[in-house]
Length: 212
Image 1 (cartoon, rainbow, N blue to C red):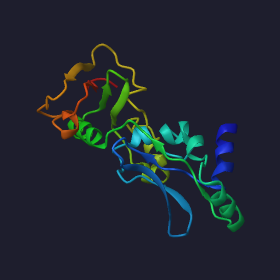
Image 2: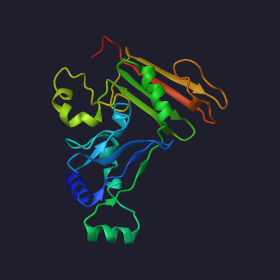
Image 3: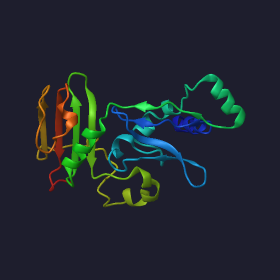
């Protein structure tokens, strides 16, 4: 598309910015490979896969939908001029998400090997604090794995079941798990991130094993 072509042009002069969690952890960034080429690196591997997405094969997730913003630079003007003169790339803007890396890990671990999704939101603002879909993939190796993850019988790992899944009535949807101010929950979602001054709702969608 023309949108992707524009991003490709911008990428020639701007180093794509990082994607950062609300608690300050980098979940996607740009590094140099052994050949000196800029490549995307995902420190958490599969953990944020369906949220961050990837830039290969047309792009997916935040890498695709917010790519233009991460390829826009608000770096100091004089630094940009100096970089242009020296042939160096300018640094793109970072994307700060509402995701909490601790909650993301807790949701990921709780879902285990089940097929389905977990969404954790803050009802008062609608902020998405965690979003997990399984089965998942590793965005660091998506280019090499492309044939296998798109092949028949791949279990549709590229589908974000939290946002793209269609759930017939016989599938299990668990909703309405509220945690109130100052109350630290116990059980599968017991995590210090849940013990703050926020109200959180957890919705778990577990796909019936008999469903396709």
